[in-house]
Image 1 (cartoon, rainbow, N blue to C red):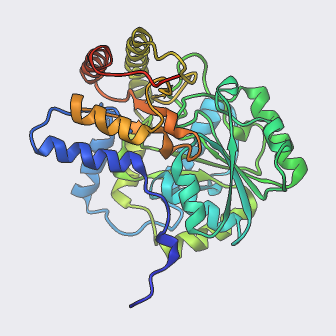
Image 2 (image 1 turned 60 degrees about the horizontal axis):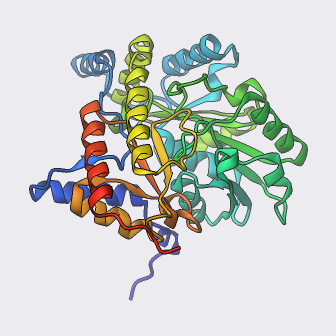
Amino acid sequence: MLKCSKRGDIASFLAMDVLTDANRLARMGKDVVHLEAGEPAMGPPPAALDAAVATLDGRRHGYTTSLGMPILRHRLAEHYAETYGVLFEPDRIAITAGASAAFVLAFLAAFDVGDRVAFAEPGYPAYRNILEALSIETVPIFTELETGFQPTVGHLEALDRPIDGLILANPANPTGSMLRPKQLEAMVAYCRTHGIRLIVDEIYHGITFEHPAETTLAHTDEAVVINSFSKFYCMTGWRVGWAVLPPDLIAPVGRLAANLYIAPSTIAQQAALGALTARHELEARIGTYRANRDLLLQALGEIGLDRIAPAEGAFYLYVDVSDYTVDSMSFCRQILDETGVAMTPGVDFDQRRGHHYVRLSFAGAPETIEAAAIRLKSWFSRTARRCAA
């Protein structure tokens, strides 16, 4: 038998598995309502599509530099100056094949085999899975609802052994919770004092409801800050993201990017340039997400599901369903089969406690969220049974 690498022996990305199952049921004729994937329903702004078409017409299809088009890196640096008042040179920006490639590049450039990297659970499962594939030791920080499932300095001080890296998400997936500026400043200071490489996922910046998110770059130039055109810019399938790198990682990431990917997609980068001109239009879409969130929160409250992380940003609700199940996988499967509502089991985001949680995305169209709310209220009133005390 031929050898297979153990790097592929990582957990599945369950949100994508649920999406596959939901699409299979839809092909069989079932009326499916998608709340499992964090994919904006409104699609890219017209300016992004126009820029892509112009690229095709102009035959500008060749490789860009490995870290991306200089003009796109320059425009992103301008964005940070205009939006956050943070100034840095454009050569600190690496354009990547989505935020996913940015995480791979950052982990490879910053950590060696056996290094210890911490992250909050519940949290985005790809952090853990990519680190494990790279033989980097994962250190889950089991956070609580009382802190919005965000890690604190207290959590870091309670770790039994030192860590080499820390991943933060602000706003976070699956919870939608955010770090306040003072909390972020404290985490940055702790990492600086203890020599911990900080990597911050800011992919949901721009999608906030009560107050804007602050970039980590306002507090340090030593962190890796990762973002993408997938969420705020509604360009999931274009696979274009970026990382703002500290000076010591620019050259390593450049070498890795050249060898692993050669360069990001030229057409996607041109579309991203177009999207950057449409921020005002995209900001107007936040009202739709807010209305979706509020509708879903009201419906869940009527059901009695009110133990929910504070959805201050992103477009997710992380819901405690422990009154009804101790197995979120089978619970989500039953609801999908019986109602057509697709949700992601919490075990995707928290391997130890996620059996008691589900994640619902409200990134869909308003009619999708309304249909889901009606079906869930009906199902819980007719079918759901509470667990024995």
